[in-house]
Image (cartoon, rainbow, N blue to C red; front, side, top):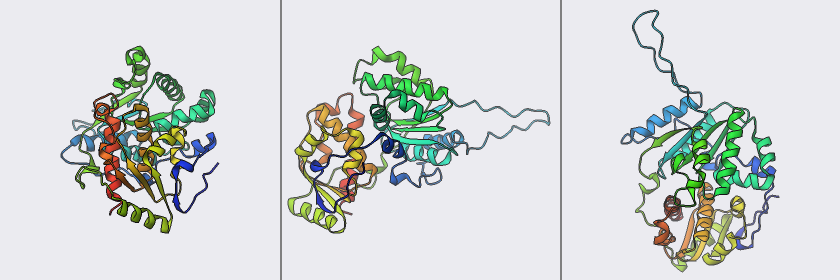
Length: 348
């Protein structure tokens, strides 16, 4: 069921989107901001050679790279053979170094009849909606599966994804994934990872890990802090956005409570048709579940490139210090990076 698009000022807490399994499958494509992502448009930073090296390896993985030149030395001298690549590539690096751009470039460059691109949570949600067997049957035979922000936050996800990817690789599917965590360290600090090392390591054997170094490109043009609006500027921003489309206006605590009533796979439908997201009276989150749901929501807002205006606590301080020191640190820092960028885009 498609969420009805409203105009003017809307309240996300009044939206209860429903998404079918068929719609989930159809939505497994790169976010709009990466519709035109290519290897050529990826701007590697000369200070970090791993960026260019990774791009070249991914071009080879996608079938567009050139083979190594033959060495001179005689007519009968054989050209060196390239080491075969594994069925999967795993882009490991900090946030903001262009991993998703490169992942979308692989998706666009690889000639394939069937290929899918989605966040980790979208794939696990697909299994939840359709059941494991039906999901495998639907995805089996796909040429490529791209998984953005690969995370294993609980044992159930570990078992589902290792089984799913194992079956797909066995049937010839190529895998490409991004994460802020190396594949043999997934789950560390979040659950009893030692109980699942066999499954985690078995999955990592399908991937060739490509490390990308660099600095967060989202922070290069801003001062590192989220923009905090006063009541007057908040009202002006939401009214201006609502005049030409739709802007959301929600009290932060109410939205956090509402997110618990909506499956994260449906967050993208919460923001259907919006041109701006408004959050009033932001407070620091101290509950882990609430914080992780907000991270998932921020990811969808960022994918849609929606500006955010907010009052209250600065959004770069929305996660409590003890959370930033825990096992989900990289997730929270990525969300802060994105929140900073989105609040700045609201005033540009």
